[in-house]
Structure formats: structure tokens, C-alpha cells
Image (cartoon, rainbow over all chains, first blue to last red; front, side):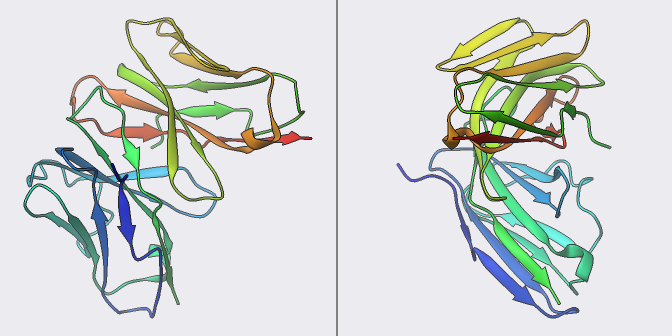
Length: 114
Length: 113
């Protein structure tokens, strides 16, 4: 079956605009994760979903960031009023279930805020 | 803050040589995973070792885990040019059990043909 897909693969936006990033997990995977990788840095955990629920939002950098997941499948990460420091690669991963399981990553969305 | 610290930050070897990368972490874990990343894009899962395991093999990969020292190592034997990539360790935590992974900064491996 298909792996995790993300769209768009690249996004260039102007400071202050809103962006929406999409993640389509592997079919049947109940857990979904968002990470961010800034230039020259490691991966930073943002948020995870178990089904449609996101119990832990503490990793989101600010209240400009939000995420939702509907139907236990596709997830969107929205960044409002983008800032230059939001420029990064946003990676989505999914796993069969929470914890103790391998996470399968998508190719990422490279976001550049001008 | 990052859980994992990896060393070396960069490693350059000749094809055919072995490559060893180390990862240290700070708090208790459920499991430790190693991932590879090419060209700054998606990560590929390599191997997962659980906290009650000490060593695991997968093809040319060998991973060890020492929970008393809170450290792990990834050994790639008989390296190939195609192994050139960044390698990250990631820890899954015990207390929250959410599956959230905390990644190290990574080791950049260059294998020269």
C-alpha cells in the first residue's frame, strides 16, 4: 500500500499569510504525528493524534499553530500569520497504534516564509 | 530540550569500512529507534530496540542499547556509498506512552567510494 503522503511538497508564502499543510497517513494507522525540522536542527515534536483526538498540544510552538484530524485519517496543520521563523520542513508520521510502534514518515512539506 | 545527543556529529569513511554512531539520552524510555534521512526530507525507519533488549540486528545494521548508561550505538558494517545520509536516534518515552519520539541532532555520514 501507499506510504504517508504530504502536500504540498514545497510552499513559499509571505509573512503574515496563513498556510495549511496536509498529511495523509497509511491506511489503518490510528496514530498520527507532526514534527518540524528547522535548518541545521533536529526534529521537534509538535502534536500527535490518536484517532481524531489530540490529547497533547504542548509541543505546538505558539497559538498560531493548530492541527486537526477528521475521520481518523487526513490531518491538516494550519499556521496562521506566518513568521519567518516558521520556515522549516514539516514532517508527518503515522503508526499502527500509539507507543512502542514504528513511525512511518512522509516526505515532508518544505515551508519558506519570506 | 532534545533528549538524545549523538556523536559524532559528522563521520567520513571509505566504502567497505564500518561506521559507528552513538546516542545518549537522559530519561527512561520505552524504546529507541534509528532513522535515516536523505537530503533533508522524509525519514526512513531502520530499526527499533525495546528497553528490555540489549542488541538487535538487521542486515548490515547492529544496534546496541545500554539502559544503565542510557546510551545506544548503531553500527553499519561494510558501508556503501548509498549509506551516505544523516542518521538520527529517537527515543519513545515510558511515562506518557504516547508514541511521541524525541530525536537527537543526528550524525551526518559520508561514505566515499
